[in-house]
Image 1 (cartoon, protein in one colour):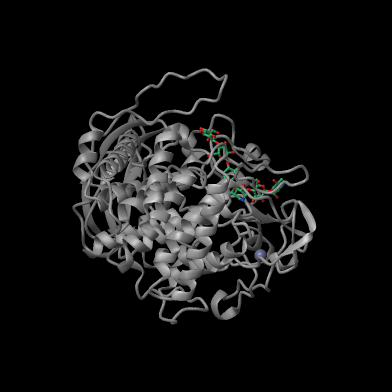
Image 2 (cartoon, rainbow, N blue to C red):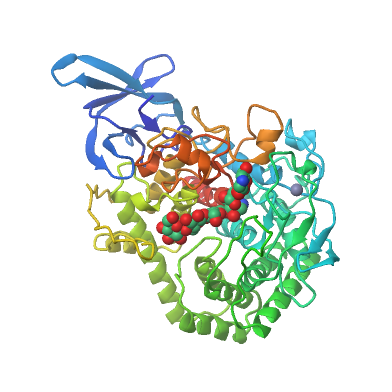
Amino acid sequence: MSVFVNQLGFYERGEKRAILPFECRQFWLINEAGDICHEGETQEFGYDKASGDQVTVADFSAFTTPGKYRVKAARAVAESDQKSVSVEYSPWFEIGPHVYDKLGHDLMKAYYYLRCGCDLTEEYAGPYVHKACHVGKTVLWEDHDAVIEATGGWHDAGDYGRYITAGACALAHLLYAWRMYPEVFEGKSYDIPESGNGVPDVLNECRYELEWFLKMQRADGGVYHKLTTARHAAFVMPEEDLKQLYALPVSSSATADHAAICAMAATTYRPYDAEFSARLEKAAKRSYGWLKAHPEFLGFRNPPGCGTGEYGEWDDGSNRFWAAAEMYSLTGEKSYHDDLKMFLHEKKFPLMALGYGEVGGFGILAYLLSKQGKSADLMARFFQEIVKDAAQRVRTSEECGYGVALAEWEYGWGSNMGVMRHGMSFAIADYFGLEEKVKEAAKTIGMPERFVWPGHPVEPYVQGPREKRGWSMRDHAAAELDYLVGCNALGISYVTGNGENAYRYPHLRPAHADGIEECMPGMVSGGPNRHRQDAKAKEVIPEGTPSMKSFADEYEAYSLNEITIYWNSPAVFTLAYLTSKESR
Ligand code: G3I
Ligand code: 9MR
Ligand code: ZN
């Protein structure tokens, strides 16, 4: 199969494309009965740097009839022999209003499977049951006699650690998805124990993590950076991971993110549970109080003897900015507004970031969506940042034959987070009515800055072919999703259980240890990583493999094929945007 397409399918309106990594003139859409339903001429893109492919585009946007189809194309095998053609097909996909219903469900249900500290029962987990895990006592890394109670939360990823900054990032994506597109989540059940309690399930699921957040705060307001064993567990079920649990030292990045997300959640949950909202508000204020008392950056590095995820940062400017913005949004108090202006002025950090380290974009969202009084200057500055960010991503995607907004050098560890995070970028620009400004800016803006390792030569930037498509923000976001679920150079859907050729073997301990062949659905893989940062990746991917093809569906390859809570969440956000757009 070498015709690549979104394996779930398309809503009736909007861009619909398949990508052919070979030259060919014509293509057809075939239905299940074998009839030709549509035929069209392809367009040549040219050499695509990220995939190393000569790319041809089959655009069937004009075709809108709901149904199940695949793309057929005839590829000339030899130039000299016109009769010798091989017929190539894409996987099956659908056109219709419900093509992403299962994906939307599965992406959120994934969080239930990652719950720590409770039994996963057959009623909700089907075959993927396990007993309550990580319920042994937790002691402070710095004082083994000090015991804290901090069960609960989600496992971060393929490992069983629980990390505050990673959790805050996932929660921010999910809670902002809810805040911006509530109609997409209202009435949706993810078949979790709380379903039907009158609270939207997306909030029920996020509360599971938030309750754990509340437990990770020290009496003085400081927040422990993470809770893990000293080393990553073997590939065993979570309840068999019985090594000593530690709360690792407080960091200012974790404390700031904690203040931010608790403040945000206090507003979000107020209409549903005033008591919970009050607890969140109190916790946020205590975290913020700690930050005020500790204005200097307190970073986190793994202490000797600890080898679990580090999530280290080099400064906390964006974290403090986000915290101040959320506190202002919650309370309307001037002091927080002063603080956020001070951080903007005094600290240097990328503003429109939506990750686990750099979080400035969440601060921007907090400010722009807040009901408190706002400074026109700040609003203008934030809008400008949103436009610049989205325009750069339009620019990047126009240089990719697959239409994805990732430059060839950006396929690193967790590249699929980048893909879906850029979907968020388009969504956010559209939300604030900035589409035309983005399109205009994209005409002249350059490629995003390329990171160069200190001491390494700066490779000259060679522009590849560029297809100026003039797409809407919606179509750009859709193209990001298309890539995630199959329209990529390997023709793989990077979401388990979703798509005819979905990957199956994530670096995810329970998925391997449970002995069940099929992984639980809805898990987003990290995706291609041109740096191949683990032994298995180095073994199975030859040096020099193009970026977009630097992936293998191997459970041991953690730098390619792990899953995390903050790789699912930007997909939830981007899909919520697309779904909300569709219903309007
Ligand atoms: O920031 C630079 C970038 O500018 C440069 O272009 C690129 C080139 O390699 O490197 C970038 O740094 C990368 C960094 O992520 C930021 O993206 C590092 O190479 C890369 O090693 C690092 O990977 C992180 C990985 O932990 C190793 O530290 C992932 O982002 C992060 O998601 C991952 O997180 C782990 C947790 O520690 C433990 N739990 C699982 C989770 C997922 O694998
Ligand atoms: O399984 C771990 C994964 O969750 C992490 O992202 C990764 C990097 O911290 O580490 C993995 O654990 C590996 C460990 O670092 C080295 N020995 C092999 C482990 C995987 O089986
Ligand atoms: Zn657990």
